[in-house]
Image (cartoon, rainbow, N blue to C red; front, side, top):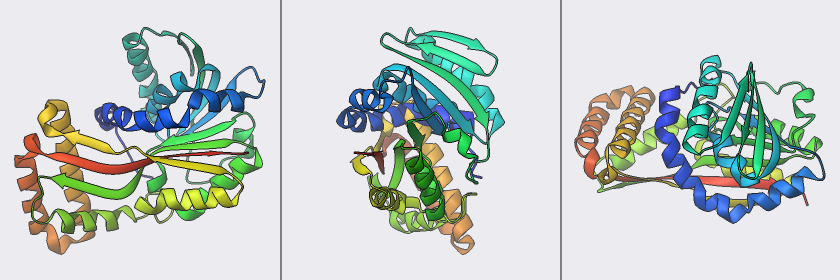
Length: 295
């Protein structure tokens, strides 16, 4: 299972939020949420690989109305950090939050979310009972880590219970470094090859994940809409952007070296040049949002 730290998730969240804003507007999630609720008291949402809850923080205000979230992750440390991240967000946004045991309730001006967390290994399809209540199955920054059989299995289970799906921030393979440097493309090819390694869900689809998911969901009768949600990181914007750029440069180099150890010196030289110029670097990393609803 691929591991992420709470610090990494916090570092990327502002850039995730900016990237997703345009896509969320085009989906009209308030209308989607009302349609999915279908007269029920609350909209049930199942959030896969939830981390510290960034997906809820993005979607809950947009969906509107009363909601019940089941938030699943395999990492107990991230789940332990989730209430603190939610409390910080609630305080910053002037939201009311009540915490009791493993349950949270967050209340906004025209929405509320009752939250429960579960520590589960998502590599295997969980018991069907997990799908009893949710009308929306969602995940952020997950699809490119998983395999085609994993997507097929989860899509089939969602279809069987009539749930919509919303997958955010799936990488599409597009990367553009500016100003360009020698070896940008060669290092990126190694990184892309590394993306295809097994992250605990079978051979990862990487940049092909959104296309596979869209094709599979359409075959199951879903209406599928995709829109771009690219990261655009400008080192000239300040230290937070530089910190993310440095993390991405170092992570890209580490993956490239794992993929081709014989290229270590070349990759390290590329990383050194990129790190030296991080404050003047602009980086676009292609991502997309995917919404699948039943007619």
